[in-house]
Image 1 (cartoon, rainbow, N blue to C red):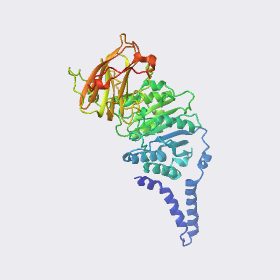
Image 2 (cartoon, rainbow, N blue to C red):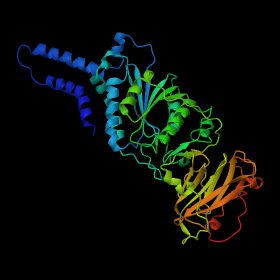
Image 3 (cartoon, helix red, strand yellow):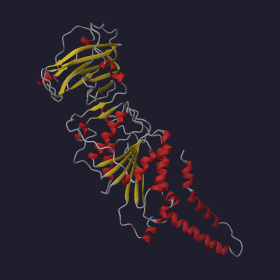
Length: 479
């Protein structure tokens, strides 16, 4: 895949080899001594050019008194094969042609947090030559080629595909631990802007999810996107992000993720200068960070303190079972089966924050706003606050037994004199069921639980809603 460029870069070594070989051939005639001396001079010059210490030429010109410009590239180990050649060529061209003299480049695996290669480009006239650079930095270029050529194993204990994944929060922590200078750094990220981590699946950005502004005000102990003042702090940096394909659910999803990373990086003393699907644009911004344009200015919504993952719809029909007009009057027939996929949702009109909790069976993980994925399904929160109708739901994609599922509603935040009211809807066995719900509390309690918090919670009587049995509403949640 990468042979054409490597062949070109090997040219300078081939030239040296040819001259060395010619020295071993007999040279006949009276000019042989002169030719040999000339040839020795040429070879000595080539060897000095190719293999002399980087600062030999700088000694003639005077060493630069300025600190080297610092460049960092973070690459996903899970790039698609179709883009690896483009990435390789782009970085090699950067190395042999575009990086300024008196600079240092380090290339890292931005998911596994490992060094791929690094080198310094001295302030020496000889390094204006692409062939000199290709020869001098051939080992680093080979390290990059081997990294891209290897098929890296992806995490297997997660439902995510980790396509081109980068762990940006951890990568910035890693850079802070390897930095010994306070000079501003230009950082190029090559990979998906959607965070994925098998150890932190609840914070995944795939499938239309994005973090609330609560994460931007949280500590690192509360959220992977949080930041603590006593954490290791990387030097000021300008980030340039290149991603491939179309990772977005919609333009709105793209805007939400762009806004979040901009504000997140700002909190860490960094600037997101380029966020693009065009590699040449990202490389241009990366090598000339002083000319990079700033992204759109946003501010953190300080009133949004809740740490949760919100979701952008793929289409209007995904929640049509919940948002459609009122269900037909009259009792629904009970389902014909007791086991199968299920959706549980709540909808309400008041401008308050209600939260849905659901557990598929005893001992299983509960899905809610701080735990949005599990082996059985996912939690969805409508962030759009559509006029007169807010909603959220939990979908169990794997089959569940309706006799084991438990669900509760919490009045989380806001004020509603007279109590909070809304409607529960359940989709099961091809039918849609509904019933009203009521929470007597006049204001939210921020999700606190316990025997003194009963008025802020109400259970969803699933079997009663499905008309499986007629039973009184269960005791309110007290744990």
